[in-house]
Length: 279
Image (cartoon, rainbow, N blue to C red; front, side, top):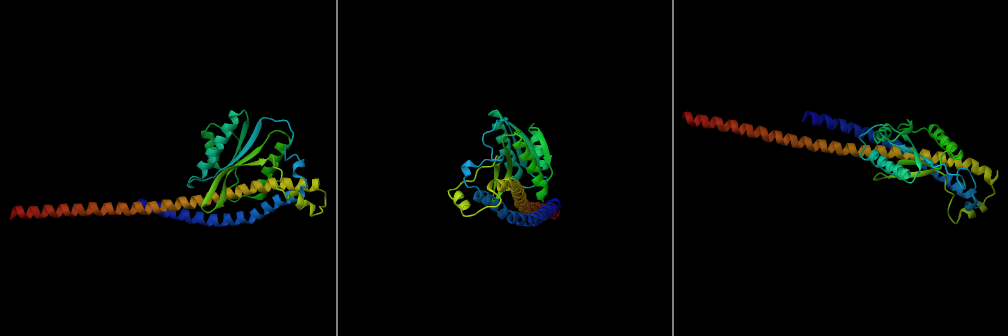
């Protein structure tokens, strides 16, 4: 019972820490999400004709290299429920499906759990990043810039990001997002929006700045979503562990009291029987 009580106190403390980290992480995510969405809106507004968008980051007609890249975002620590297993299993299936179709997928990871998983699965990891639970935009932007350089140079045909997308406190979805090539803006009003404004400098110059920003902010948002999802799933897992420890403690205490009572009853019966035999 002492050991169970100690475990209960530890899991309760971990739950409180995860709650504090979740509160801070969700504030960062909600702060960056409007910026990410606004960048996408600006790209759509600038494009006078999305169907004719010609930019190296969009792709278009280019020779295929037969090689793609996938960044898998996991966690450095465990005790976060199904956070890692859901993302890692989905990314491994994606990688194996690509290999079966004849496409080589280079794996990069963020988080020790992701690196260890692919090592155990005998899948080589090209590079392991250490972003932590407080993503820095400059550090993430440097990774995005390298991916854009690889894509523009034709060394990879596509870049994907496997992460846990945060929708709400009760819903987190493992997702594989295509980071590159960028998809051309869609919607019937894309051209109408651009006709309402006169842009300076010209459309091509604006897109040369906006499209790389869209890649960087999308990748940064993926990291933020993953951190929020990790903390809320750890918070839920530690609450369940705390409740289970409390329940186990009550069960052990009840069993102990029953055994103690049975022993006392047996001793009293022996004493009374002995006294009756002497009488």
